[in-house]
Length: 298
Image (cartoon, rainbow, N blue to C red; front, side, top):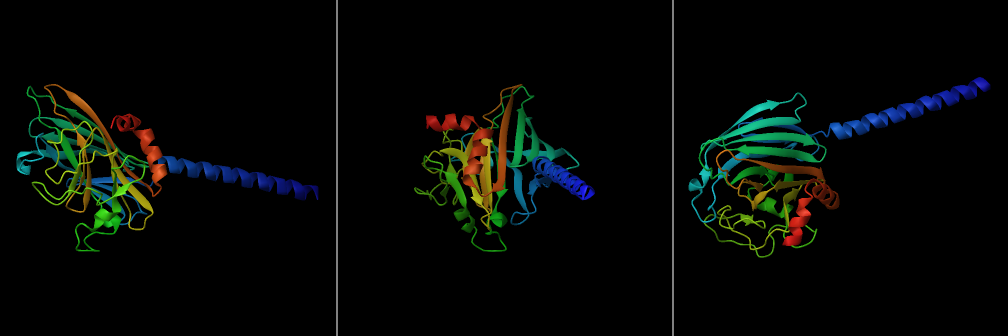
């Protein structure tokens, strides 16, 4: 009988130890292996996750670098030509380095890292030349057709996807789904919709219909087809939010020009999380704490 109880106690001790080890390993995996992986080919940045609709998010990275004075000007006079090269990608495919070479001599280094709640972007733009660069802003074009269930395989309506997309237009933490109130229809090029953040010259954004509202938060995002996932794009600093014309959304980052020898740092994040708006905003506030200060000044 004594041997029996000793054996039972030993069994439960080993079982508890095994459970704790399993829990620690699982928690470690949740922290270090968020199931997000990266790829880059032919100017397309791909973020892979096995559970999201379509299995990946493709971003035209980058679509264009742009000069100021763009709102009412022909697009070909705004774009600064560039090429992008992949510098490296690690074995785990969760860290990617790119370099963009602009035709005016500027180069931009991109460190792109996948983590638990999305993909982090750390950029350094440098002007090694003796001339001022007009590189004012740039466009990562996020393709969300398949993610929202409104891709080319599902519908011929190129703009059906926008009903799954949101901005924070009103002064609260409730997302405003597109098309929002006061939607504009006239511009040099149509359709689409642009939101110009506070502190950005309204003459320096995309030549698409410009919404009169200043966004309450510099966030644009969408909800997945199965309603299980939330995708959102944030840049600091941000030049514009843009609902595009190829089943895409943009949060275009700001450079603001570069003096000879000058360099600037830009940071951003593509969030890919479970569809819990409060949880997302909590992480956003932690990642971009200065956003609260921006909101108070609006």
